Image: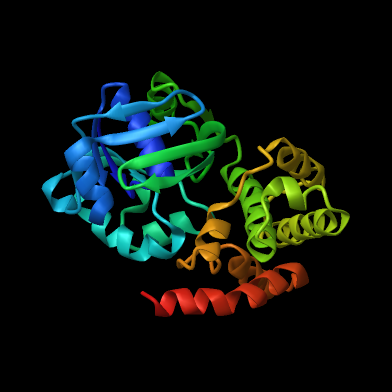
Length: 309
């Protein structure tokens, strides 16, 4: 299959690398020193599932040079999505499948402003990975998994083909029975983990073991769940305990990508995580004091990082 990876970071680099290793015609969209290294030395993936190198690797910063793909995996940061959606246009033909693997709950809507809605699946991924150095992806923890589906929850041939594609590349693949529930369940988890991790600067093994921050995590999860419920998503109360159980299974040294970005002074996904909980909660009339705290206390650092752009 001809595949384009829009954003060769921790997510795109890992899953795109697995698809390339399985023999698919994969183009990596990257930039800067990361792009130069991939072109010269290939894409290296260091993983708990086994290290591998894609060399030679097809990589470019010009999507026009790739042309239409059968599958476009969009794996940029959420704050980069409006620009990335415009850059994706030349990659999308009549039958192209566009699969977003982003954090947050608004990716499909953002992509639909620019791309044909009929080409877009909903999706998410589960993985702890990041760019360790130019041309090198580090998969630190979590079983790499992609979850996706049609936005109307109908089964389709293309959804089944996506499951076969990823499973054939050695990646866990799940078709979500209710896409909104799947996306919001991850949103509950990642907005909580990101917020507490970024405020405390502590890995998950530390803050989940302390009574105060553990209680804060439960409150944060519940706030996001209530916002989702108010917007019509069937998020059950049992998801709080299930999310905490998942948090307890994460490698104790695990950190969230937003946490790493804020700690290192880079622009982050604050607006699409706690910022989105606060904004959507306000629209739905649901109080979100914990996420308001996360957002307010982190916003000065986020503002400084964006000025640095």
